[in-house]
Image (tube, rainbow, N blue to C red):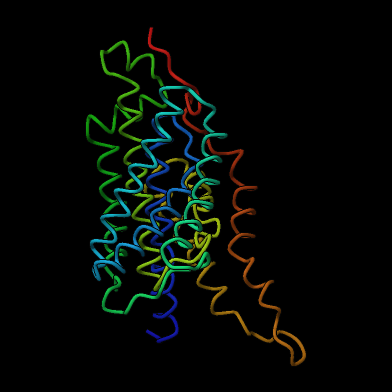
Amino acid sequence: MDDSILQMINSTLRVSTPLLFAAIGGMISERSGVINIALEGIMLCGAFTAAAVSLATQSAPAGAAAAVLCGLLVAAAYAFFVIEIRADQIVAGIAVNMFAAGATAFLCKILYQSSTSTPSLALEYRFQSAPVWMAGGVVILAWAWMKYSPLGLWVRFAGEHPEALDSAGIGVKRVRWFAVLLSGVLSGMAGASLSIFLASSFTRNMTSGRGFMALAAMIFGKWKPIPAALACLFFGFSDALQIRLQGVVLWGSEPVPVQFIQILPYLVTILVLAGVVGQSRAPKALGLPFRSS
């Protein structure tokens, strides 16, 4: 196989990794009935935590573990507001995203005297390929778990028929808590794969809308693990393609402005959503607070 094709496949898999983690996390949350707009903010918190802890410990696994814990804590705060207090899920998710953008820049300034980035990690203190394999494993496990396990069935019922689940004596709120927390764990790992796998440091707002792209992939995949993963790979391919196209000359002797190339993944996301959003059926109870009878 041609080296350029192999490089393109490798690049696609790498840049798709954060999307895969976040999309599967978002899918689990939304299949339980909880909209998770907060994916972007949780990823950003995870990215900062992973970079900071990896710098302190000189260990990528320690950074990833800290990012997962951070994602769990942020998701717990989000779950408290939307499940227990029954706050508007869209507004609460946006609030988490705004908090993450400000808090990570503030902590970066306090710890490293820079509000834009953390110091760079040496290559030996970063992941090389492990997150790619982990993301693939997460997709397969999520598919099997949702399809065959009792808890996966409960998550699906919590988003489709919560009253039926409640009448069977299973706590809908507990199921939704579990789903949102698991979503936070996976989103935290998505953030870690950005800062200590794809990059060598945390930079301000480095998620650059990937949390929303993961949501788009989830919708494109109709809230199912395998189709959502394929959508992530498609978006990852468009991102890898824009990297390869930077500097290309289409007419005359001047290259295409890099800004036009960089919008390619976002343009693809918009076009995909415009084409499929009306054809995708969300879980019936998505976004609806549950009140036990």
